[in-house]
Length: 144
Image (cartoon, rainbow, N blue to C red; front, side, top):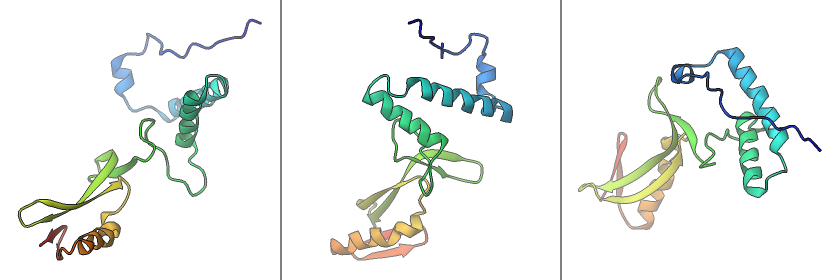
């Protein structure tokens, strides 16, 4: 009787400028505390779909020993990658093989944090299975 509910909506006092600024360490600590409190309040109460999201939230907070960090609630296999020292992205890398006329002959999709160099042998193997002679030209590899 009289179960206390929390209001998880954002306070109206938060401005767009405040939301677009990088949070302080103290703000992050407070946010993590509130997130754990939220998890404890919703766990087991709203069905399997919500439970799946709660598990994803926990995986973001604590990836676990030997596990990669979850970076998206929508796609649990996406990972952070880097385009440069200053530019990050979340998602995937397309690893392509194409012939001289730039027709794609093979394709692999790699998590954003995977090094394409390590996947090159697998992509070359796909080309060989198709009977396509491939040569590597720097970062570009051509099939003929």
